[in-house]
Length: 160
Image (cartoon, rainbow, N blue to C red):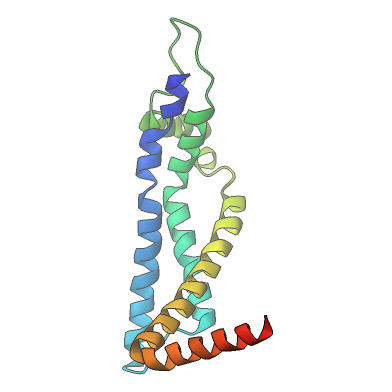
């Protein structure tokens, strides 16, 4: 019912910090690497890939107990009338899981999540760096890229 729609909302709001952690870790380490290289420093493709994976790993490990709580809150069955739900909220859920199952319960299933999300994040940051480099080049010399675009349009028009 209506309660199910909002179940796990507090954990969803807490999980907004996951991408913030991810970007903070990525940008902090990236800036340190670039600063060590001096003015000509740029991130290499493999570094962007590895940093993206590492940043997501840190974000996932630090927020995974909240993800577990969110899942359990969303899938807990509605209690019978007069019976209290097993979990009353995110903190209650995390506390009960830790008390009853220990750390293993809070991090159950994390290995699969790490493989999935770190690969996606690694590819995302690699793509981000490539697009950022392209945008910087276009902004540095827009006439050159507009001419290339125009030539491409003319070539495509001839082919069709």
